[in-house]
Image (cartoon, rainbow, N blue to C red; front, top):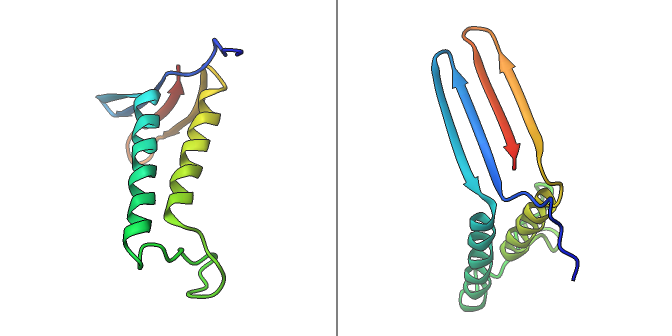
Length: 110
């Protein structure tokens, strides 16, 4: 099995407002395990509750069409997280505003 050595393991969210600076490290493996556990819970919830097995409507049409099940949404979030981890070290977003005060937000993957 091929192992990608450049896989991201940590997401850093840096927020700086004037002189206040905050850094939130998010371990991606922990987030992935949480999504896996949540997926199993949602699937179990869909099995035991008849109303939970009804899918969400798509595109704002209430009650029309098949829609998307909650378990599918959680699985899609897990797939997105896996794809984000495969890029290795990269900067997802870097935003800065100057009015009315200086505010910077940066999201990095390590």
